[in-house]
Image 1 (tube, rainbow, N blue to C red):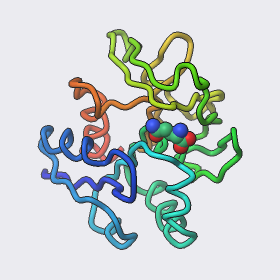
Image 2 (cartoon, protein in one colour):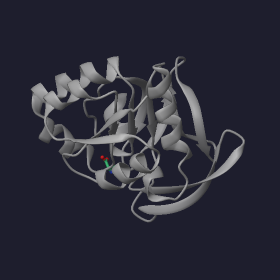
Image 3 (spheres, rainbow, N blue to C red):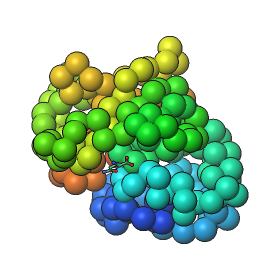
Length: 188
Ligand code: GLN
């Protein structure tokens, strides 16, 4: 089945996601208008600034996106992960509530604004790029941890919603995007 994946293209680094998803064989649509959500099988919400995303979405866009993320597979990276959470702190901000986590924005402080670190995807190492990254501080009982860095969960999943606090679109390793396409393909 040819999968049609949307990449939210309001702001942020959506183009690297588009390329990676195309390399993996998906048809990609850059989503700029809420009604485009009706045409896609899954959605990627890229990194950027989550507060800016909320402003650009507006109330109607936020509600439409909320319905989508509760019904269809969605993968959020960094700012996208923040948008998918049930609880956002530093500062407090509204979330779409698709994944039962508490997430702290800009959790690594100024000194280590950005870094490349090695984490674990299951039992194998994975290079991870963090940019003004958030930290997942609480994980609800329905949430599955997919990847860790040190003691911290950095990629999680609940139902068909998936989130990563790092940027898998900025390394050569396609496994995280493939994991998302597998969720879209399975429909669960
Ligand atoms: N610091 C951003 C936020 O709080 C996220 C950074 C990113 O997406 N690279 O929304």
